[in-house]
Length: 341
Ligand SMILES: Nc1ncnc2c1ncn2[C@@H]1O[C@H](COP(=O)(O)OP(=O)(O)OP(=O)(O)O)[C@@H](O)[C@H]1O
Image 1 (cartoon, rainbow, N blue to C red):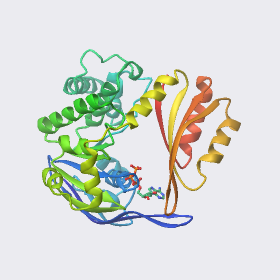
Image 2: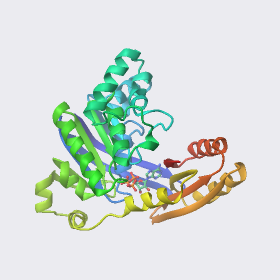
Image 3: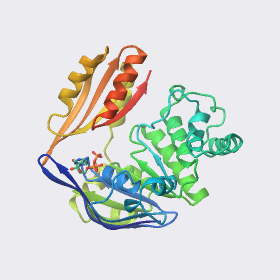
């Protein structure tokens, strides 16, 4: 279902070239649940962007459901991308739409007639266990329910592959398990191929058939999950296997933030570059009539610059907030709105 052949992805930055994915060869079979695990910076996000055609490989082939994603564009690429459903860490739902309308949104884009859309939305709502919540808005749902909406929406166009990008990383352990159970259920019912990108070994352990361990852009180890657990070869794999016994706190951080800030927006910015965040915050304050609080940040120094995540809280009137978010989205950073009070 997915074949990666001699795939390389290099980014040119001010301070030189960064090799994000290095000579990766990979086969994912139809109906398989395949996990890709790696620490921050291993190349997982780049892999996701290569799989869904958001990035072109510098060299090599990325073939998903018979489409050579890196070598097509325009209408062909748009069609090929309909074969790939995607779910995200922070759900990326449309906050002004109900559960039902979020799920039918991709069908609207694809030009599916209203009656058919409604029928398909009902099927999907059942499939993900959201009966009775059709008319709710995302803000009225729990994290697990939001991800159920995300899954239903990703499946709307009957994709052949479901890409899960840290899809349970913002959820508590119990909810994580219920979402993972749902993915297994969907995999069995629909024979859907699922690729999971994660930094949590628990996710791999719980549902993946096979796993690839990434480090510095390479797949350093791969195989049947059980075999990798039994006999990890590389140090990085040994660390992941050890992780199983340790607690996670990332999801706790986010839920604490959401709890603390009841109005405005909490936004996660992910940036790459030496001083990318500083002028941006200054500009936000100057350009818009909003209050900006930096609530938490983590910058990791890499060989070729900094890679950081910043949580900021924006407060002000709705119009200014929307303008500020639109401004952020134009910048060369990743922007995720975590809450919408
Ligand atoms: N657009 C870009 N420009 C320059 N370098 C990049 C870009 N995107 C990723 N990189 C670099 O490529 C490498 C792989 O990054 P990537 O985001 O794919 O890793 P990751 O495993 O997904 O990590 P994380 O979980 O933190 O997102 C890193 O060294 C990163 O700094």
